[in-house]
Every structure is written in structure tokens, then in C-alpha cells.
Length: 72
Image 1: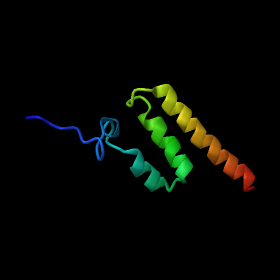
Image 2: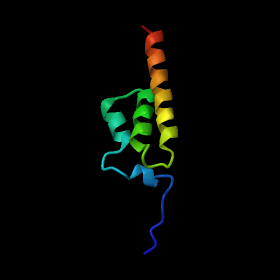
Image 3: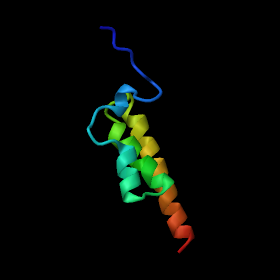
């Protein structure tokens, strides 16, 4: 059987865990920036460029912190 990869709905880095980041983000009601932080951290080991994904996570976390500090 030739199982095709669905890079739109189920890329391989989406299927590494029984719990998907989108489920955590929704359950915890995270902001856009915190959600992306979680997403990039959770998938960093599975997409091929861990350093880049962790840098993206840091960027989103820094943006969240800047927004919180600005709106104190």
C-alpha cells in the first residue's frame, strides 16, 4: 500500500505526539503569540531546523512580553 503524505492537513511534524499543539493552545486559551511559542517549541525536534524554530519561539515570546509591558 502506498501511503501518501498529506503536507496540508497532516505533515509529519504534526503527527509526532498524541496531543497536538493546537489542542493545547485552545484548551489553555492562549494568545496568538503564546500559542505560536508553544507550537514552535513542541515541533522543534521534528521539522529539521531546531535552532530556527526555537528562535521563532523566542521571537513570539518576546513579542508577548513586550505587549504585556506596554499595556501595564
